[in-house]
Image (cartoon, rainbow over all chains, first blue to last red):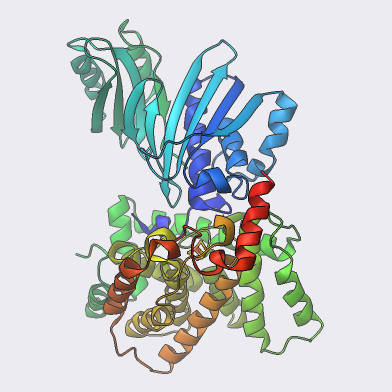
Length: 220
Length: 293
Ligand code: SF4
């Protein structure tokens, strides 16, 4: 924690965990999809189930899916923007308390038919933890520059990724690999202090055992 | 070196070097964040301007909250001030009205700066900006006040908590009151020790305050509790600037806040199962609110 966690964040109210944190989870979901959303399904768990409307958590999800930051005043009108764009969205509840008392699951479908499902926890003060992406149980808080690399779980791949990043003088702060099943597919989460350029991403993406990479800059 | 786990240590370092507490906080935090002091100061200036803007918007705001439960109270007091019907000195009435206004802006999805949380976002701005205005204080000194508040809040967060769910409202409005008292004392020329004392005196007056939001929303009692926090903050600063000391040192008061929070029932920590949330009216509001879903 630092001084800007105390004097801040600058955010749209009323609740750092029920509003600001939710915007962030939804924004990451839309980045992972990487294309225009045509359909979204949202499942609130824990204390969200009874307070999500009063805290504007529904608008917070829509704002995040539209790519807004937690301090973007347009969050208030995000519902109208969804109606205008004719994006189909529904809200429901589901017990996800095994993750955290304040958890949300967001499933989105893009115009190409691509689907992404994310489970995120709002852990307090607007901080978040992403706990699931599609079939992968993951764990990252999006406070670093983060590379999300789904890949075939084969030997040598991790070394390849580490080498490409090191060649560009980027220091890896954390590297985690999450498998769905042995020898199947896995997801690699790489966190760095420095920005990661397009070049690096393109070079990684050229490996045929790597699927679509998502790059997240530290959340605002 | 300080890891922001003792206000006494920070004051000692500052006094040894014969500088302000805010200088030490600035230096240590810049180092921690890996940026220069100038960069930190600039970032803090941006936050400060957001706070000013937020208060301006709060004063103009006439919206009801999303739940429809709150809104419009600050305007009643602003109106009373304008028409000379308010009974307290204007400096105090203004702080009350501004604390309410910011809390109300937060409840209707306005843009605010959480200090340290969204629920308690009205306390520091109301005190700091009104003190600045009444005493024609420079923006740079107000910034030092804000940094002082941040340093105090950081120690509280590290040693106790700033979350209602963890420590009750004493951790949110109590921390904000301590921060505001420290900022005000700094801005009015108090010594480093006086700043620490003001923080202690404010927190002592908030110990035991429970978190009992009706229907789980950041509205009742949160908005009006910003007023209590602000009033305690200015009283604490007033006492400290006059040389009155807290018998229990500030770091021990923070320890006590944690101790009280740990012993507090979970029903009184944001779960909306006790206190005002559990009153007859509180429950009725909750039922009606859930029905509207
Ligand atoms: S009552 Fe609870 S939610 Fe409301 S301001 Fe206090 S700590 Fe925050």
